Amino acid sequence: MEMKRKGSFSGSLGFVLAAAGSAVGVGNIWRFPYLAAKDGGGLFLIIYLVLVLTFGFTLLTTDVAIGRRTKLNALNAFAAMDSRWKFLGYLTFLVPALIITYYSVIGGWVTKYIVTYLTGGGAAAAGDSYFTDFITSQISPIVFMLLFMAATAFIVYRGVEKGIEKFSRIIMPGLLVMIIGIALFSLTLSYTDASGVTRTGLQGFLVYITPSLEGVTFGRFLSITLDAMSQLFFSLSVSMGIMITYGSYVKKDVNLSRSLSQIELFDTGVAFLAGLMIIPAVFVFSGMDGMSSGPSLMFVSLPKVFASMGVAGPVIGLVFFIMVAFAALTSCISIMETLVANCMEIFHQSRKAMSLTVGVLATAAAVVVCLGYNVFYFELTLPSGSTAQILDLMDYISNSFLMPFISFLTCIFVGWVIKPQWIIEEMEASGHTFGRKKLYAFMIRYVTPVIMAVLFLQSAGVFNLVQELF
Ligand code: PHE
Image (cartoon, rainbow, N blue to C red; front, top):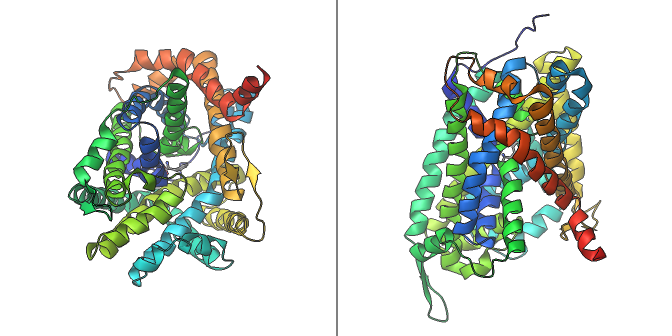
């Protein structure tokens, strides 16, 4: 039976920008710079780049090609390829369902900071307890999450071409301009602290790009690689059905191979620029101590940096958070679109009905995540050793646990059951060449599944356990 398509991107540019919109998000702007600072600067950059060109490329190709060839969403796509692998579709669907519950909450936090900077609250935001006071309050985080979720649902409801593509076409170039502007500004900064030490943006830049091999043992190298690997998944939005959904909206004449290279470049470029913007600025005003982990980098350290910048601070702060909100919105849209598109296919319902239903359900779940900082507060220790609330737990289950597992299964399925040729045919279906096809076939069969299995076991805490035993 020929499925009637409910939408498609107008062409290659629309697809590239929408997919880049999904890929570029808080992961690029907040998580990438903090990992780079923590994991040896240039060393992390080199490892990350190698991984993008090998693993990132393999997983992204797989998702998009499955989407375009089957013209189905994850839930049905795997079943259509081989009915015994239907469960993989279900597993994949679970990831965006979990991610939306907390991504929208973070989107709400960013929205709150836009309002703060708009209303002249920059100095207050630099206060030590501002962020904690905000997220532990009962009403405000929910209200901002609602705003963010409503914007997401509205664009998804407008459809693929009129909503997602149109929005991404405006937002993504704007985002690029803003991030380049702030990055250049960051490099010009200079500050002399109370002890008379002057630090400049250019020094910060060198901290960022110079590979630091200090204290790098084999174990440390491995842990940097694992950090880079899990960052890569999250950043490219792969192994969660999102790129399958977007792939299903790509027309047959689009040169997939070239589009995918452009998406990789866009995503990695923005991550690199985010580091260029954040690391020198934080370095100038607070030295390396400012690069602490977790949400505190974006919501606590940066407002302090903006406050130290003098007159430019509030403006830069405002532009920064607007940019993050854009990045987060296009990502959240892709998450909701995947849920909505899968549900439309399964329940044979209209986009309107499903946008509304998914929106309401996601909101209800996100409220619970917000309440994780007050009413439902608990402290859980994850296998990685960090302390988690509901938000971190959702993040852990979806990204550290499910994603490597799904990638592993997908590699086994594509590499050994349906065979890489199936994907390669689709990449060449438009008559274009697929330059990296040998690399692809090798990666999907041999390298990627092994590394995914390692990543999964590591997240599950198996290695810690083994270490303790011996
Ligand atoms: N890739 C996005 C980022 O880097 C996050 C994201 C995750 C988007 C999952 C969609 C799905 O922030």
